[in-house]
Image (cartoon, rainbow, N blue to C red; front, side):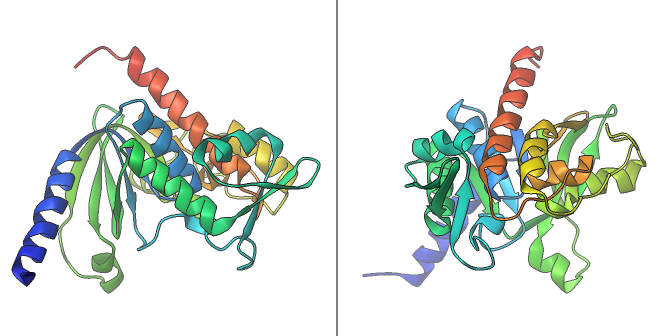
Length: 262
């Protein structure tokens, strides 16, 4: 016999246990699009304490919708191995072009990431950062509906050794840092350079090259990387997104392994 109160108790207790376990993280990722999910997957596989904070109800970012709501995505040769590892089926369209079902790719990536140990908290927005000694040391969180309703509700904080801005075109985390402390990012101008027009060939290359640390403790991945460093967008080809997430995870793993134990 089911008891409604037990159902509520189970949900609240379980969620709070997960959230409390995520107060101090190795890595906090903002944005659960393909780059953020891939970074979380790679970090969790290596035993790091990592969580993603996603402002929307669903994960997957723009990958859900394929191209203009045609639920197919394209990947290139270099990233084919990633979808193979995730168990996502791919089909060669032409030499160097591979197709995947956008729903299967999104669900497959999210499932494998969670299975590896990644915690995903949806409907949570980041409204500020914590900076100590000129380094990102944590994030300031609030419920997305609180921000949408413009309610005066104070946020909570979580700590992290590294943070990843995987918020896509808006590069929200980098913008918060620029707004709060001025043009101190590791770009040519010190500020956000801005996303350039569509150019898949260049965009797919620069998104990986632009995946890097943009402020001490803050890394950019996915379209946030091209937005911050001035690369072009590339539309419904997602190989670069996956490679970017993989690269940022490797960079952070190297940084964490070289740190003196606290």
